[in-house]
Length: 412
Image 1 (cartoon, rainbow, N blue to C red):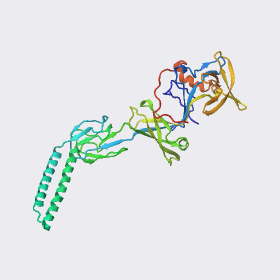
Image 2: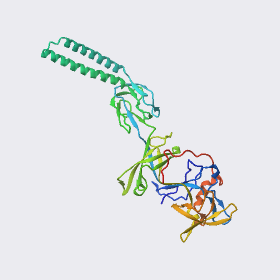
Image 3: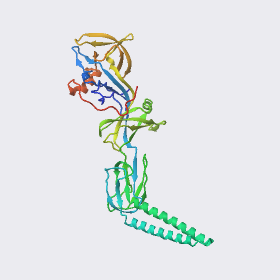
Image 4: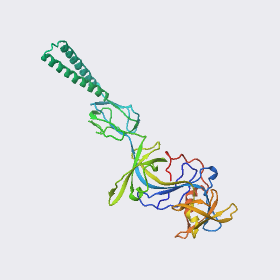
């Protein structure tokens, strides 16, 4: 049974709540969301008013969007992560960025003393120049003998070795600067002025990489840059839940650390389950498609994966419908309070709501009959509406609630 969840529709003016079902701990089994009309003139739609007869309320019918989803939780992981370290050895003489700073590709994060590196490069260049001169003299004195040819070959080999030494010395000079090779947030920066480091190795990857540096006075881990543009979330779903979804389904993310909703899609569903304690779950990968500030590596999020969505339909609480001998009716109330029993044609029923395909029009009012709960009070789906809107004294909130999901929402 899907879980009913209340949510403001960011693309509309207000939300119509449905009856809540209690979900178990951990991964939720689903949710149905209902959004109200977007025009300011429709802000009174679905407003409930008590009638003279106890246990009855009226509601105004309007076009709705019904959605069912599977709920899961996970943490944000950056798609791009680079780790960098000094390839050259020396003392750290300057630090330009600290942990928590944002860097751009090409920024120099820190640098080491180049005095010894400069001396090594100068020496390598001098040795190469001498070797080239020796080779030139041997070539000029070549008499065609085997001995002369052997001397020239040896000199050529020496020149090749010294060229490589010069190239290494130049690279070491370049390695004296630790340069960011991508835009992102510095989540680790262990270097301080005065640290002595010995050459390590560094590399980068579009997905992730692990590199190390050795230092006499800092952490053995180098600088870590986390990209802020692309995020993924890994979640686990039960066999029943994973059967409902498919790749490409729209995902709505919420987090206690982020003020607004953001959106994504399902990108991968594992074919084989992981069994823990006799319970099988399937790994599902989600991709964030929104560009939004305030997202960080490891941020906990809740993901609602929409697997069913019906838009612009007339949906009313099922307990407003009476069905006898396969004939379904509702009680319509006109502006003067006169009641009329009218036959309606039913569409899909989603939990406590039913779609009306014929017999009702947007803007008409109908009667919803409440039922007595176990404690003797009246209750039905309209109680959730009263609880939700209690702070508004029966009036709908106005104003734009935000934009639509990035990339659109899935179809039916």
